[in-house]
Image (cartoon, rainbow, N blue to C red; front, top):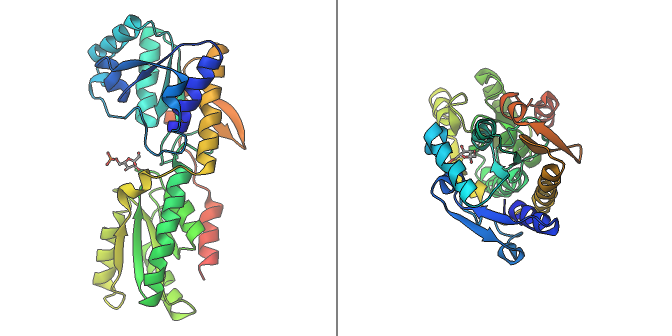
Length: 308
Ligand code: F6P
């Protein structure tokens, strides 16, 4: 996200537009945490994880009164367009606000979940994916030395993109995602065969979600039905949300930030900047939020084929 903040700030200044930074998202807009930003305010941040602007969830912005306070603060600071970085919740608020106050708002997708329709990637997703793979590689050492079964839970809220792609990239034996029904018999069979044939360890990547029951739920069921496996569970948690961003994330964040300013100069409004097949695209907020981003069945098939 810092790479995007840097790109928005510098592209705006380059084009003669003054920049105000809003701290803590919509909460800061309501509480008037707004500051002039200059090129030096975004120096040396492209390599830092997190966001220098801080972040926060705001229930108040969900109310008409909250949005009115936000609008009044924008008027006070002579802000006439807004660029927001975030996911589903951020864009839902943005769309509402833009309609209510006829305000140009441009969204930049920033979430490790990669669950926004209309963009191949969201900022932070690639970094999180690489963090997961590094962790799974390390867990594999114990799994194979002790000849054990591991259930590793990854984030994603209700989306299985982190789980699916980390499973593919780490050579996991199976993946459980909320977008597909879990056939537990099939999973057990796969793990048993894996052990019986050539493998001495099994790693199952489990997407966090109420649908999948998470890694603990699955391990418990497995222990009950197959005590011979004695599985171990690792929940990767917030380690997935930090650290220095990958080159890919820095590049898309920089491109999207500049594209957001270009879009404003083109008098575009109420769109999310996306990236599809390497090219910048504009996606209406409604579509980005509402439409379901499909999971590639091909990738699930590949995991199954390659885990024999
Ligand atoms: O939406 C991003 C995300 O990291 C999800 O993958 C995860 O479920 C959630 O946020 C965690 O949120 P919090 O930090 O509030 O626990």
